[in-house]
Length: 261
Length: 262
Image 1 (spheres, each protein chain N blue to C red):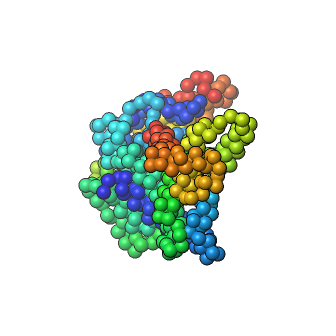
Image 2 (cartoon, each protein chain N blue to C red; image 1 turned 135 degrees about the vertical axis):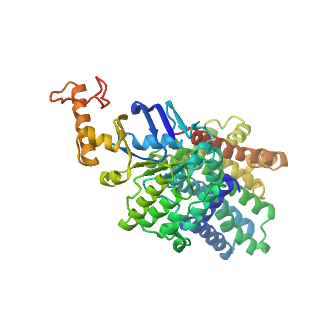
Image 3 (cartoon, rainbow over the protein chains, first blue to last red; image 1 turned 45 degrees about the horizontal axis):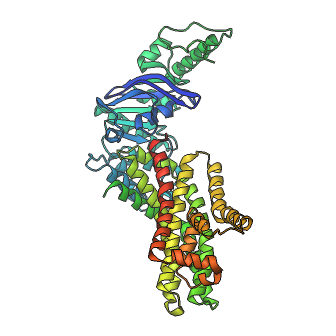
């Protein structure tokens, strides 16, 4: 459904993404995980066209991503935190996004579940952080795009709202659509994700199914498996810079290149 | 509605309810009304208000504009994630900032002149003042947008905005004054005319002053300004210079918006 090929991105002297190739399957939830500053947000921004890759290809639904951004009709996006203009009413925000995407099939399930009608006339600046996050989620799920990109979707939501949102993500998967989700709550991701992409220092160290990762790392949970990946990463890093204490690297792990500090 | 109109509509809705924009309009309203209240005639109020307009409109447009563009950054990213062309989005965002600023100025400064229409201010003079204020709002909003897109460091951005304000309202005139004092033995009137056109604040000042009967008080230079910019062609040249001060920074800001990574 969405394919990234050999993406490279630098910000000045700082290499952020290096040779990242990733395929997000249709009808699957792919968890994009990694430590802070590993390049997750940059990768998401490249998919959305907010940031341009130095090198690499992006295909959405088999079509190459165009400069004009028409391919973004296939994408719904929920950023990590909602920052809507404070003097707009909730209804203004929802109507604006709806009018920017004319002709697309509406999906009002989440708007109804989060009772948006009750707060349509409220100003965004008067809403609590959790309610803003609900509006944020409703904006992302307002249509039926082939791919949903969710950046820490349950951050700030109460348990009930988080549960509703996770159920909606599962429903999207059942409809055969794709979800790319990032979160630091790995237990939550384990209950949602089919596939995992582990990004560290701008390189993809592992891509595959959650079951495959658990099997390879002999871990009992996704959290343990990611921790094992990070330990391996740290070990290969020590090995790459010539420090003592390196451990055996499993053959499926994409290691740090030699000489990288 | 197209993307420009939709984003502009959202910007107008947001900023028309913004307390700083409302306070900005009320300030001009209170000051202009106060000048009439304390016995000023229309031309006197116009001239007093001109000095305020030339200082306050650039300052508010630059500082408010820069802060607003930074504050809108995450919302802009959300809009950029929709299937809309960057060019149209930029146009909507700029107009959504500049038009409320210009509108607040026109309402605040214009209403007292309508209420005191019999106090002697000419329609041409009031129109020149309002047009100059609108031109300055558009020009300095464009400069503010360019600054905020040029640097991601908010503190540096606001510092650059204040620097631009100081440069155009104080430093530039000081340099021109210094140059005219240093080269006082030479006929500098024509070079000064050219220098006026390279500063939007001076262009706005000349546009308004030539519509009033005060240029005669400014000696030979004032007479030359009146002779040059008081004609339809001269007014057109000054208006074109102010328009260039809107278009050039806007073009630079647009170029940056189209190419930058968010």
